[in-house]
Length: 157
Image 1 (tube, rainbow, N blue to C red):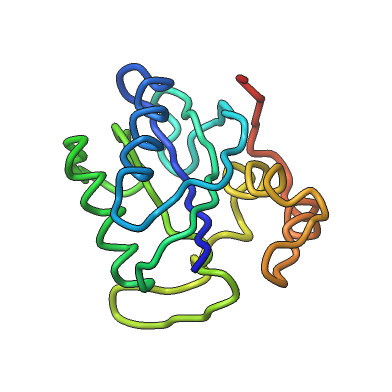
Image 2 (image 1 turned 135 degrees about the vertical axis):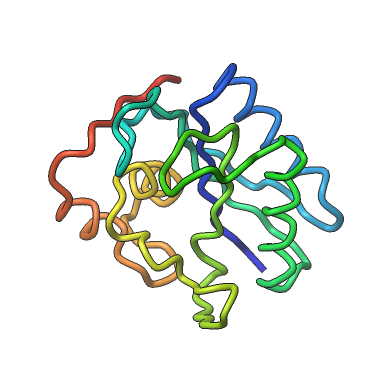
């Protein structure tokens, strides 16, 4: 199954965090990183008094079921030492499961697509780089991106 993951960081060496996270994803059993967006520097949302984020999107192919992929993402975050101190606060790494192809899931622990994917430029712009037609698995990435005002974003590399 193909997955789209959104990765963000605003603590420590942000580029190293991104690179190490993508490497960790590629080391998961029966999982291949198929594509990676450019890195974007983005303004924090919610809690504004913190360093800007680096964000990317990756497309992966994996034998994992969605709940297993969620567990893998949480495990990678834990391996980086992520501590959730408060909502929208600084983080060493954040790995969000955005899409599992066109699957829709709604459980206590997992909602797919991610419930706020249409509201966040830092999620949509990198995904658009992976899907230049503007759609991903039937979801309108370009149309959703066009509806967002603000939320500064700048390509790093």
